[in-house]
Structure formats: C-alpha cells, structure tokens
Image (tube, rainbow, N blue to C red; front, side, top):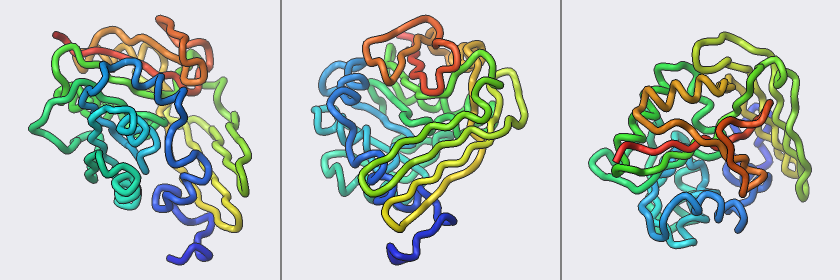
Length: 252
C-alpha cells in the first residue's frame, strides 16, 4: 500500500511510520530510566507487545539484553530495523516465543496487555511471562486502573505533534468480570494527509482485579508507579489512573 492510500480504515499497527510520527521511534531518557530502574544493568529483558520497539530499543541502547515480540509483523520488522542488537519475533502474549529461555525481567508497555479481552487470556499471558523469568524477576504491566469504571467513559486523551494529531477515546463500557470492565475504545492518528486507526475493547482493571491477577500468576502483591511521575510509587493507583504501571515479582 502506498503512503497516499493510507486512510482512516487502515490499522494503526500495520503502519509503524504513522505510529512513530505520533509517539517517536524511541522512548526519551526519562521514560527509559524509569523502566530500566527496575532492573540491574545488563539484565536480559523480555518485552511483550513491543510494537515498533519504542521502549525496547531504548532499553537495548542503554545496555540491556532485549528480546521483544508482537503480533504485528510490520511492527516487528520495524523494531528489528531500529534495534539490530535486539532479538525480535512475532508472537502472542498468551503464548510468548523464547519458550526455552529465562529472563531477568519482563514488561508490557503502552497498554498492550489491556487489549487481552477476557480474564482467561490475561491469566494465561501473565503466567506465561512469569514462567519465562528467573526467581525474583520483576514483571511490569502498563494498565488502565481505576476504582470506578464510570469515571473513564467518555474520556479522551489527545495531543498534537508536528504535522498531525493523536486521539484516544474511551467509549461505552461492555461486560464486567471479577478482574476488569471491558470498555470500547478508538484510536485515531493523523500524520499529514495520512490517517490510521485502531478500535476494540480495552480492559480497565480495578485494583482488586490486578491483585487477583497477580496472585493467580504466583506474583507478589502489585506495587504501582505512575508513568507520568517516574519517581512516584504507591500501594494502590490514584483514583482514575488511566495509565498505571503495576509491578510484581516472581518467587525466589
């Protein structure tokens, strides 16, 4: 597909150039230091739903040994181009690649884990990540977490960037369960005359749901960190935290 043919009907995750126009090809120093701060220098890291490698490439450049995977073949190809030192394979969170290897830590940034739309898939995915880790290894999940899902319905995250704009809409809530409420969402990104979108359901977790999920996977009780406030940490996320990083550790 030529660049001029990309329209609102195009999948955002099939067009890494549009994605990178909005978010940048690589995470900035502050965000990289936040994720890297959980792990010793040189740690072998497994990055799920890595996309085009925005976070994984930055960690690789900072001296971590990175292996990333994503469902999108286009994103994985771009990640491998951006990070020749890393290893990248197509793969699903529920059944990650690198099955015979062990890592010092794992992370799923940018709400990739929240697109798992049912509790069984979320439990399987977290257990699979935990099984890839050495004892005491940390897992970081970026999740929308709030005490009352009604507070996020109708909310919008948006920003402008050079030559375009980004919009993330939280729409109506669908079904609920003991872990999360599925909320319809839509992302639209415009870069110049090119547009792409993504729509589906996003799991908006309750703090109790995150604790249950971590317990199911044999992880320690979750601790929370706010991505926009890289030094903050608390036992529970603040109310209506649309992007909290939950951290748990495997048993030693």
